[in-house]
Image (cartoon, rainbow, N blue to C red; front, side, top):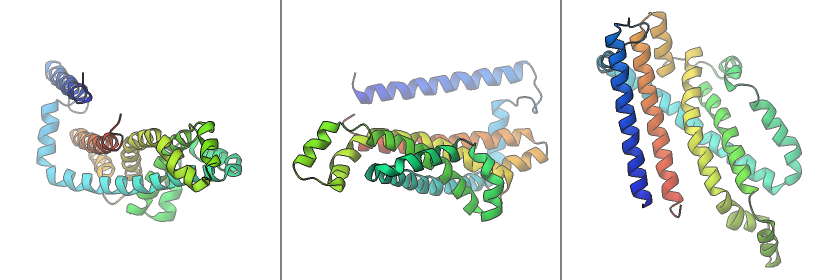
Length: 251
């Protein structure tokens, strides 16, 4: 079976599984006559998405902008920090425990401080996403850089290669699979953190829509926003996954 056929089968199975879940959800909500605040039917949620499409589209764009900008910054910080530690090994004893200590606390716990320092606008959400993404990418990149065979490093040094040459020609290509895997996983985290931070204080976005809907006791709108957020997250995840497959074409 070729990789393309395997990927196509996986997509088909995913779509079939999603269809079965939607039908079961619709049947359960309709069959048991569940009230909307308990579990609205999928058809009711879809109708709510359609009637609020302008609001939800604007909110999704706002949230994705925060997530993507924060994601890019987080990836740059994470990769840069991993490379720095690899190039200057003595800093590992200080920077690795420090990064672990900062990220041992749920990133949402920093939200009040970040909102106080950067305000209620898009800047605070970008900072929060960058914090969440950077640690994930940092760990995956560092693990990839550490996978290099010591004998290969010694061989390149015997031919006169310096630290930069070894990094560029050996360490980074070796680390690429793990690095890209960490970047793919971080996409979902970036959207989640952006939405949660918006719920704590924002002028727009999916999180803000969810918060306003809860205040109005409009739980169908809450589910509508969740559906749109899930679709946006899957789109972001899929695009990064596609880029990963294109870059790692030999796999």
